[in-house]
Image: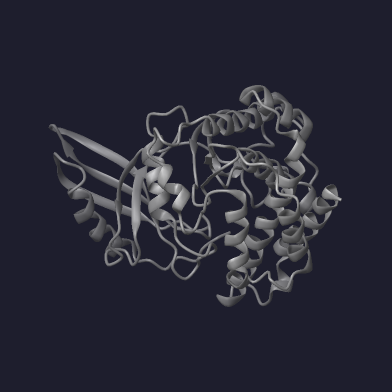
Length: 357
């Protein structure tokens, strides 16, 4: 969802020049250009930054991305920007491809909110809007073998994330996160406690889903692993058909990998069935995807996957309700009736719930 941005690029460039000068040692004559793009998401403000200078007697150019914590357009109840930065820093050197991070700045006085900077990674992303299942997009432009390779690349990323050693990475502290608590019961408690924030408390299917989830909790792993949280094709950057960067960790928590697998499947279902778009030929289906994930992970996940898909639909319905409210509050649409996103999410959740009956 696009964020209206009103930042002054020249003033921002001046601020970032001083900030980057302390973090790019040996760089002389530093010049910074800032681009404030539109339509890069509702959760954070994203700035594209070109840093020019001389280093070791040669001209040097670095393309950076600066992520600024949300203020007026906050979808989730609290900012997790610093946790996101710590996850990216911890994964550097692992077999999960992530952008190199430069530094985190906690002082909101510089850009109006805390931020971090990371290296820009070139590539393409399967879009959410319009859905990557629609004709004309980069995924549709691939042949069926290419589409399958993209899909399986995403499943391989899930497996790599879920086999990481949380303690060895120094990420055990995530279990105490106030905005992404560890474990399924704590996750449900967290979302229920913030129903007013999301504005979905009056939606009958959301309440029904919460009751169903609480009444049929699956067993949890003895040692919870890293859960990406927003695991979907739209958060993967590809070079050709190979994933080169795993993006957007703001929903990260410690728990079972099934939560990511279900979200991966559910968000693809939303972008096809949920919006009335035929699924692209060549993309593997649910059963095939589950079998492949089980082969990679060496364990069975099918028994409780229906529960995890309702869990995905429950959270997605909350998020889309919040996005609808933000669009109305900031005058981007006249009323939520003009936005089908939340309605589509609620309808898909209702259909998904029937699988638990």
